[in-house]
Amino acid sequence: MTKLLCAMLMAMCVCSIAVFAEEKEGKEKADPNVVKDEKIALADLPKVIVDAVNAARPGGTIVEADKETKKDGSVTYEVDTKLGGKKYEVIVDASGKVLSNKEDNDEDDKEDEKKKDVKKEEAK
Image (cartoon, one colour):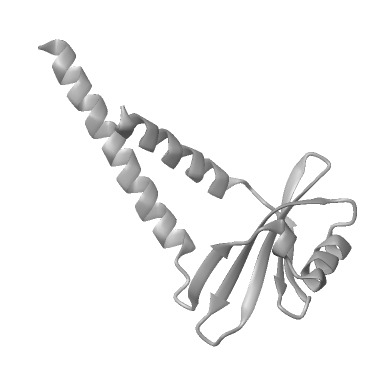
């Protein structure tokens, strides 16, 4: 009986964490102006974007990219680079203008890992 109660309690905790993580991500990520947010293959990044990111972070390695399309039709690229053991996020508009160039605090990656762990637990 005690084992059953412990198992139920653990399941409730896992579910609570999953719900909290989804709510938190929704609050942080939800930009009402973005109508489409998609991962983009590095090979599909336009040359003007690659050149802008390389100029913003010389010597960095591009590791991931997202393409965001807003309601007004404007497009921005969020490009993650690694340089010197650190991860950076460079945001560039479609013309190649750098809008933001900062160190990435990896909070998004931590949230993604938590979601994966929760999904693994739910699958068991």
